[in-house]
Length: 291
Image (cartoon, rainbow, N blue to C red):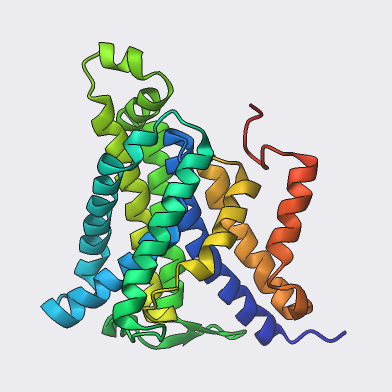
């Protein structure tokens, strides 16, 4: 079998870009599940809201891509915090199934509202001028925007890991979710910490939505197309494992890209085949801890 290197590297690039979105989204899910024990099925809808928020900022307020990278995650993160305070906090301590059903219903409502007003077709969102064009690397042509998405996503993932695993704020967040009674004794407002954690996870989903808008267009169902794969990424990496989600997200994107080149028929199922194999061998995921 002869290998067309240009086509192979092109698929690897597509895999890396998909892996960037998988990593950002699964990171948000891992933060929410690992620290709050909520299986957040609304994550895909909130990712879509991030893209729509960037679209509204540009078309209604003439606020471009760069401010949208900050404004959209903050706005959708605040929306997520409102959801946590008004709905999710009432099912705290109950079985995971309640959280899954509630967030699944929320996802259907949010997607339904956007689909009702904007239909199912994609709305265009332009690539910022400074990131247009590409570079000829000799063995492949690299679109600058796609390279930016991969590098920026990796930096955000590593900063989030550092914030949660290596800083005092992250230690307080983890302590507030693992032993809230003890943390309260130190005068820390535990409900506020939990709300901020949920807002952080939702903000990461919205950030992925803004990054995705120029590549995949802005569509009400853009999150629904992705969320099942992202859940598979979280399961393979280990439910609640921050670093596991980052590594698995990028790795599975590359595996998916390679599968598209060598055996395209299996590209849509390879992630789920790997998930089944991992669950059979290590049910807690590659980096998860056994209960």
